[in-house]
Image 1 (cartoon, rainbow, N blue to C red):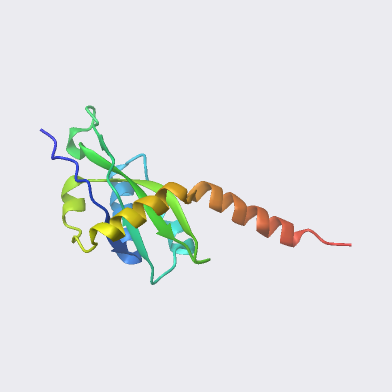
Image 2: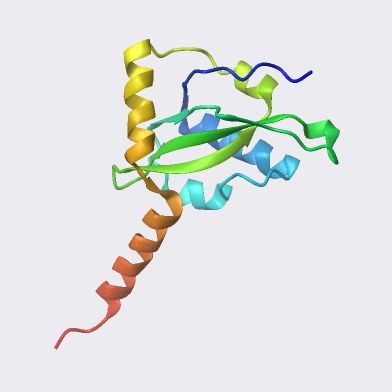
Length: 137
């Protein structure tokens, strides 16, 4: 039987988030962001937040099942917060200390609902770079 999905938000620093993303890459999880992209764009001293919302079962890969699919609120170098998804093993999530109070968790969950996705943010940043490169007459 799968462990019960916790209804909580956990805070991690950038190094911890990179380790979680690396574990997801090593396990071949489908919901993760490239570690090299994160290293380039995350604010180094930021706090990021994970909120497990779905138990994801992989019957064909029982060695990494279940996973908890977590929306993750990331702080990028521009100071903005963007939203992504990250699959995390339950034991790994359980090792992240509980450090947030109820009001903080509600605020973070609300910010997750209103944040742009990582993809939208990356596309906007790429478009901004292209528009800066276009010569103006």
